[in-house]
Length: 556
Image (tube, rainbow, N blue to C red; front, top):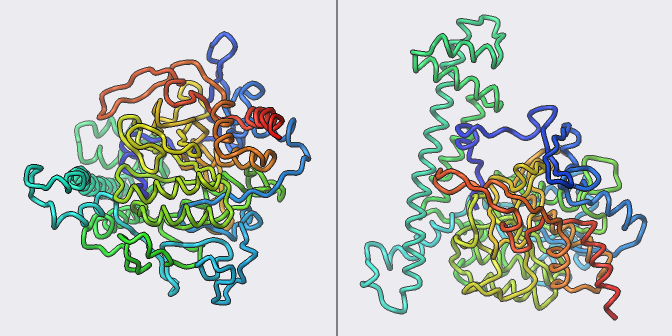
């Protein structure tokens, strides 16, 4: 999973930052299928994904309606939801009361009180750290990892020079090598483009200071100035750089951070001789070497991701602060196995097993990749979760790709056949019917199950009790996990398989065409939204609880 923001794309393709304006246009369809314009204020955007389409003309998940008409003051039971992700701000004002507590473990006594193999795991476990308070900041991309493992065996060889028993590994190696080379080129190009933008802003600022000594200029004035320097490409480029800096709040100092990040990528996640397991100290190719890491699940890591995911899922609903999650019955179990780079299959498998063994009934996995070195380890862990009646939910990916054509990991199928029934893959939707599928979201009639809100998601942010607006299938996944937890809190007799089916069958169906951009800048096409996922729906908490109630009444 690529963790560093692709700033180059945001700048040069004209990405509009969330919440940049006071109002944003949304749209809704009336009964005749017409598009009616609607305006969402900055404040309304903070809760749009909890709204109801019929009542609010906003394609949210009807959570507010569910609380108002179904849940009310009904008592549910606690549901542990594991968040397999980065370190998490467990002290955030909107999360601290929702964090899982291992009551069988005495904190900080150096003893494995509950004898689960993990010492002092009072709030969860970090598989990317050690007892010296060190933690992994950068881990390999999966392409780098595979190239490193097989370079000695396969480098420079053709398929006819490889034994029959090694053909599968050779195929994985050649695919990974091609991607690794592409990743290196992309990283260098991104670093180069950001350096060019920085230089343009510096030169442009100097130029504008000579024209506007009081530094009083706005974007519209710079538009006029561009016409003056129409034939001066250097000055024109510099002024455009300043415009981008103003528009996206970018400064030379801030851009230095991005340049540094790309340099770090080159020296770590893309570098074959980088020792990504120096901190945990385990053997990455031995799944039985499984007791490593530390109980410190919070901290200031370069890539902060889990706190935003956790807020969407289970922020405190009763404290009148910040935002509201899906239920105060949710207890969030942090399990750390994500850093900048790609998740190691060993950490994924052990994290799933840890969550299952310690009581999680729902597991959220807001990450993914397109290659897998030890796919069987993860598949076995998913099967283990299925045996223990635990539901797993993951984001479908943010590459605008068809998952039916490009395999994404983790997944629930082998040779195009599903091997479990406890796994949900989620795409991201927006509040705008004219652009209902988020432009970045992966999709797939066979291998994406359902869509959920994943744009302009106002949620918790690491440090200083902060909040932010962000986007991605990483945020759509905890929306589904939240609905799953609601169902398991109020209808605990339903199995993971039944909860999955309830979520898929109860979603809102939108029967109209949406834009899907083709790969490699080959234009776009119109596709029925219902054809972009297995269910053809966007999840709906209100309808899910109604259906869960019906099914629950039929069970003894």
